[in-house]
Length: 147
Picture (cartoon, rainbow, N blue to C red):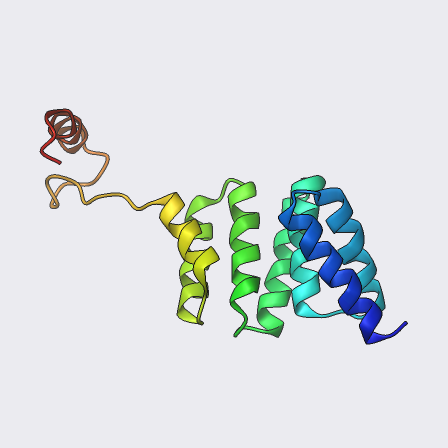
């Protein structure tokens, strides 16, 4: 059990994950973590567990541990954000992606944030967003093409 075996399992897992072979990727990352535990392989394993098993609380905990162990790695923030999205926690995902950008995140984090989008400011900023006047004024302005 050497480090080269771990890197081979990790590389195979990343390749499988990019081709949407999530079960194969999970098996590869489990083997990589068994041989040598690293924050990056633990984070990818957490993402695969969330996708295959739906164990979001365990996956979030594992991914948070990975981020705590290596807070300068933007890939860990990307994986944690994706887990949050799978769990239906959009606001936490957006915040995590933004943290990943702050530590030097790449194109993948920026594209996730762009895909998620941001909400425009309400038409009347002094009123809360869910106020009926803001809601219906926003709908009317959008349909008229003024917003």
